[in-house]
Length: 90
Image (cartoon, rainbow, N blue to C red; front, top):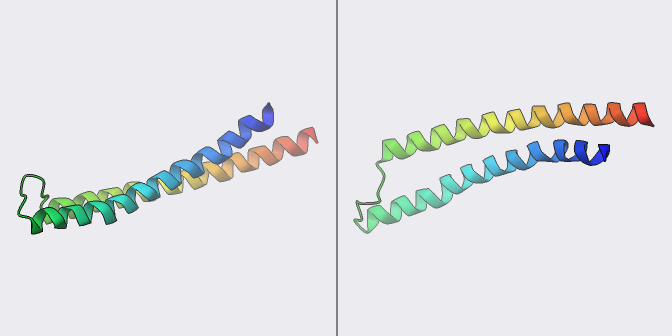
């Protein structure tokens, strides 16, 4: 029971970090392509201006950095706690 609690605490930050990286990659690749496609088809109802889109990508990148760094900090903290518990209980 104790091990599963710590295993979840170890894995959860990694999954959250991977989700943040995936969201940024999705935004950079898929949304950029969709925006260029909307512009080439003159569909200005869904086209996002370049400055606004660049601002979104920049904000998404910095949020991704913050989430990944926080996830790594939590991962290492929980890993150390897990090792301490394993050493204490044998």
